[in-house]
Length: 354
Ligand code: GLY
Image: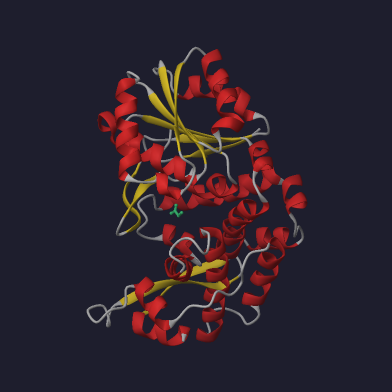
């Protein structure tokens, strides 16, 4: 088993990574949640038939009383209506302040269940069991939990660190290639921003089979990099912003496609290549970097260029008349493995993107 400890003051927690770990979930939850009697498992309609019964059996075998709540699969479940439904179901199940919520699924389930845990009874303990590559390397670690509003994604949320994160890489086997590739966009991002050697490790393993052969190392490396960032800047006011490499421009593509045309991973993939090209133009990023990044993304079927108009870029970076003089921090690469927050006027950014 690979183990990491996220050392936040007073809220230290472990990330455990091991094939088959789902069946050991009861034992590890018991250690992490010594006072809990009842566990409220939140999962979705895709994951429940695959892993719901196994998790329930593992938790029950460790002496927990378990309630399972299933939400419809998909981003639309990250909404106030589902959150209110969860609160009511938690109370109906008899959840108390010493009990805990368990999220079994991808980022939607983790964010929704985490926000419900952060708010029910003014906050109860929370365990993340992420089952997609994207949630294993990103959203399950670091404590950002949220729901979407009409006004935008992740706009109502909290920082609510889990008590434990359990990752069973075997759950990745059931992912469609496109969903696996979405997670790989974030995996490649870690190499770009924080670890050049990891970038080259990935470049030498261009397909899913090869990555799965080393998956525990891949998950460990990504989570360790995120751990270091979160320990330094839990509240996202400094170093944590580096995790947004490719996300500012990616956000423009997601928004322009009404969050339907492009998945988050696809938008981030194209956003990273565009940000590298931007860095090259500005003289921050060595020439040829964008090409190197594109060479890792393209074989996975990820887009490396998404057309976007100046108006769509402007809308996503918040450039309106009022904000015309305002600056933005764009995450750029000084080299592969080293990102910086580059401050520039929004209007100048837009000019460069034309
Ligand atoms: N997904 C970016 C962060 O956790 O800060």
